Image 1 (spheres, rainbow, N blue to C red):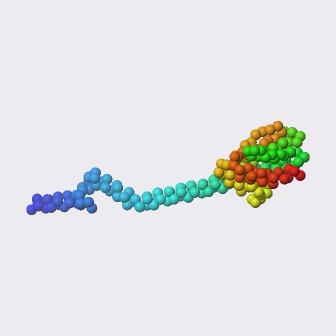
Image 2 (image 1 turned 120 degrees about the horizontal axis):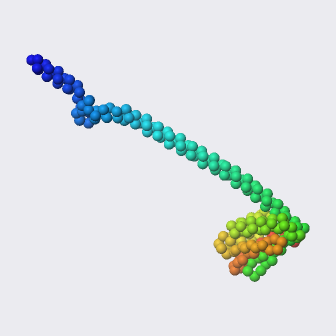
Image 3 (image 1 turned 60 degrees about the vertical axis):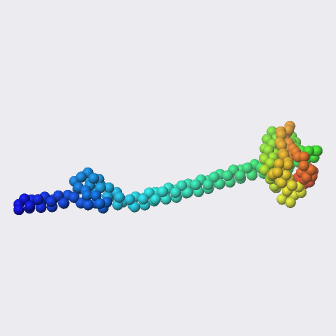
Length: 212
């Protein structure tokens, strides 16, 4: 009887040390597996909070990244605006120079394959020569971009302008620049009859101020 009691106690104590896990495996509370299981439970339980934290961090980084991009865009636009303002001021001074007949001599000469425009300083002033050359190089760049909208030469309805822009865009017209003594020279080159007629019409309008 006593033995039975002891055995009963023993079985009771033994059963207290064993439990059936959710996966159906019998585990011992004193085993390493049970200890590992117990240590992992808090981590598993907190997994949703961890995921939420990661998402919050990612969201914050995304917002900061977008804000930085917006700020850089604004700064870039401000810098470009100041640069354009400076370029406009420079171009304005150069335009005033070449339109002053007492300082700059202009000539527009039709040639068999196009047109030659020459601008030279009357007194060969070094500063004036530099400004003339800078402006003519700038104009050449704009012409090669099919942009003949120079305000000095009138509005978009100026004779020949649309054809020249179309011809330039379609590689039917080229424009070259070279330094000449006292200034610079632009030369338009084409073998297209429409471009030749348009250059003639256009040059008659843009050369008109020089005739005065």
